[in-house]
Image (cartoon, rainbow, N blue to C red):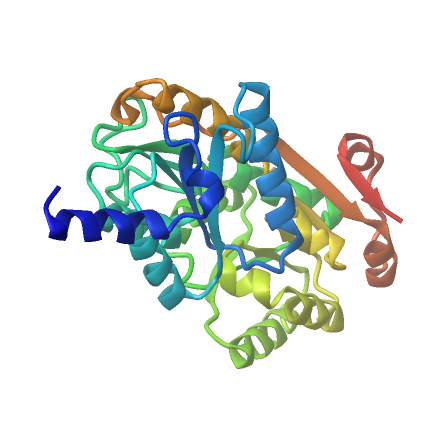
Length: 327
């Protein structure tokens, strides 16, 4: 072996812990990059779902598979970790969110990628189509059109007199928000409800926009999920409560943090389902021939404590269908 090739081989191998290199013929390496920060409780749920799914298929962590993971909502770190993971040449990469998938997809055209919780992989150019993605990536989307309609339905059940709805999102961290907006718009037009897009990029935007929305009688709010709103969820929830605005959030974590109600995808479920694609790819399947799958598991969470604070009575139809009721 040439000296330069030997040094390159040693440098690449050093990027992975000894446990992953102890039996190269048996231990397969999976690189993980997620837009959720390390300290978020969702990380444990997502990783647990992935490991559980892999275990059911015979892949045991640190026995015949090794996971090298990075969890962050910092875009500069996402780019750095993407380069590191790709440089280490894992057998498969799994990414969560658009901001994690984008730098990984730019960095490699050959390493198989399984993405989860990406809203519009076709529109953003990550795959050619849902049925035949082509290239080296496939995975599981975060968006299903009926979600947006459901948010409007929930607001109308909670507050039947709703005449105005604000649509809260961060345009930088949620560049695909228009998908959801179009769904909400279609539903509000049916019921002749005014809809206002509310882009927020800093705390002052949150305060100012909620104060303005509260000035309109019979207003409601839909808060979209992205790293910005998730990180600031306590501040958002506090401001919403201050102005007593009935609000539907897109993720369970908001309701558990004191938000009124949430309806959306179970974020951990695609990780469990991703294990099946990882298994197939490790056994020789081409990711470009594995169809991109849409969400199948949704969850409704109601915070009754917050409902009482806002003076709202939650209809029995919502309570009986809720996956979780916080009292």
